[in-house]
Amino acid sequence: MPDLNLSPPLAILLELTHRCPLRCAYCSNPLALTPASRELSTSDWCAVLDQAADLGVLQVHFSGGEPMARADLPKLITHATRVGLYSNLITSGVLLDEARLALLVEAGLSHIQLSFQGLEETVAETLSGFKGGVTKKQAALAKIKAAGLALTLNFVVTRQNADELNAMLRYAAEQDIARVEVANTQYYGWGLQNRAGLMPSEAQLERMNLLVAEWREQLKGRMVIDYVMPDYYAHRPKACMGGWARRFLNVMPDGVLLPCHAAQTLTHLDFPQFPASTLTAAWFESPAFAAYRGTDWMPAPCSSCEDKEKDWGGCRCQALALAGDAGTLDPVCSRSPQHQRVTMLARRESQLGDVALQLRRFSFRDEEAPRTEVTPRQ
Ligand code: FES
Image (cartoon, rainbow, N blue to C red; front, side, top):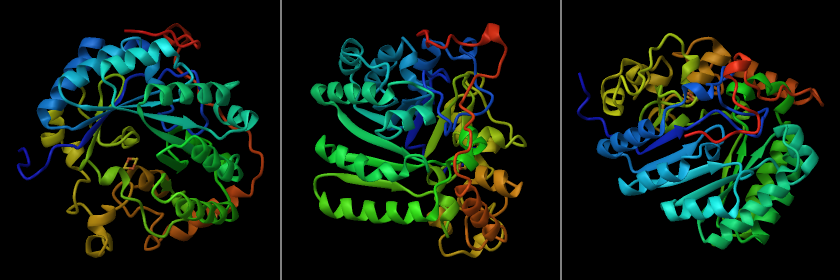
């Protein structure tokens, strides 16, 4: 039965493709990546956008992989504009040239989120497996600014580049960026696989906290800094995705519909797939979407916690990954019996020094594997 009190999602995130020229060790994509041959077609994605608009969604985030690996991206943005959606492109920027940017602007793109793995080429290459990425990203930034597009810079932080944070924020200030996201890696997919090699130390975290506070003060009114903490060191869980199936709907490259990017690790749930399911049916009627929505599912002490409608019980994928049960307390919460173990684990892993990172790679058979140069596909 559809829940008539339920609001539609605020935003949809379209993972157009898992193909990407970068091979980031912290990538939150699943370990089993979707081959190009199983990606939705241009007309499928346009139908997804139509359904999103009909459902009452306001924003669409084009993500991946690298969404610019799809040659039809301008068409999809044009369609999003036509149906009245605010569009955001989440990109590494390394495929962005003037001609492509002009097409995106003409298509009506509203905003770009450009990610950096720091400013030191060697460190960024260690994290992304991509040579010369910083230079390419800086060139992309100049072009985006010249085009006058709204922009957020996203600095992904791990223990390899945490000590560069001051330089990163100084760079953003010099570039007169209005919004910056300092995002400590969250441990899903490849990030979870490489956690021991990525986890920052508590000392690094303390320095980051101070730096963010200082820069916020210094740039008040000029630059907004969003700061995502590494939640293994937290005492209260984050409101993951604003609560399970409350605000976001994710569409995977093959059309699987999810409440969050990592939900497919919850293999006991049967997630709907477009086009067999509409977005409306997934949102209002799917038992998988309803499974951890709201507060009725919560175990004690979450069910009587004063923050239950702030954090919505934290992250279900993290509860599964760390405690083996998606329906139990998020172990980063200090009220979880697993909390001490998680904090100790983070401390121990952060002291491991140089751990070889397993860079993201496609694990399916060669004949299905996308070409590593990232050939655009419709
Ligand atoms: Fe799935 Fe947090 S990533 S609920």
